[in-house]
Image 1 (cartoon, rainbow, N blue to C red):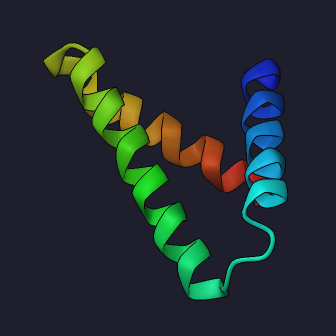
Image 2 (image 1 turned 90 degrees about the vertical axis):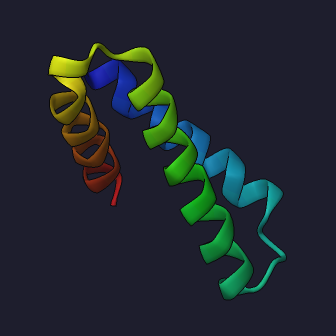
Length: 66
């Protein structure tokens, strides 16, 4: 879990470096699309009975980074 949080935090820092000159509304749009993409990938890759737990885990990881 610690390794995953570190990877997610590193990805967020790289994204900030790449998109650092964009406006706040553009960053918000990019962030929303990234989060929706993460949730969609979780929905596709997890079995039906574990979907809620997987989405909850992704949301917990995101909350831990902020």
